Amino acid sequence: MADKKATKKTTPKAADMSKKTVAELKADLLLARKGLYDGTLANPHHIKAIRKEIARKLTAENAAEKGDK
Image (cartoon, rainbow, N blue to C red; front, side):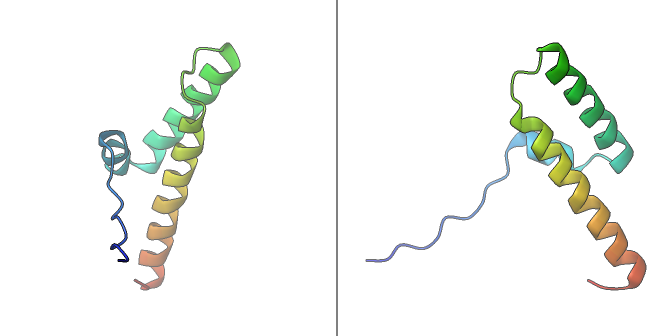
């Protein structure tokens, strides 16, 4: 009756972002914001996704410095 929850699948773009460093992601964010201002950005949600990925990376780095998992 009750089906199992669907697992979250990563998209190819999300997999590419996870391999980038924080500096590269910040550069991508700058370009995306510039594209939003120019009107050339096709997907405005991309900015939100980049910001979330930066936050995930910084959280992981801070946890590793403190010795947390």
